[in-house]
Image (cartoon, rainbow, N blue to C red; front, top):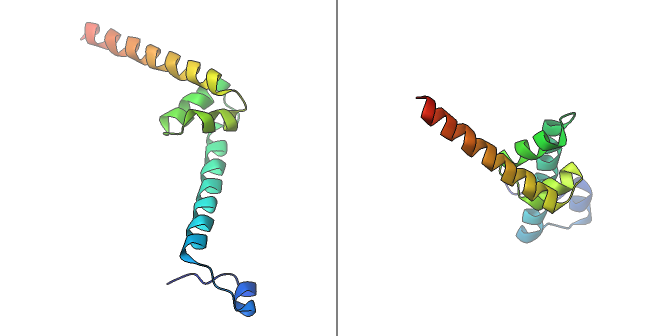
Length: 96
């Protein structure tokens, strides 16, 4: 069922174009995504916050904004995380 706007818009006789509707839905989606991310990282150390958001597929710029740091700091933390995981994987292979 198509969305035709709020009740106030309907009373005024206005309808939303498909482009306006897509934009509104996209903005709402971004808001929900940010709120979920903030709930996920609340109370965790900064390194763990970066790790969780990176693992969730967020881009470094968005991670930096949510965590309250710079893109450079996020990049370094993600790089260090990859190195640690690589060492852990190699360690498991030699133990097998």
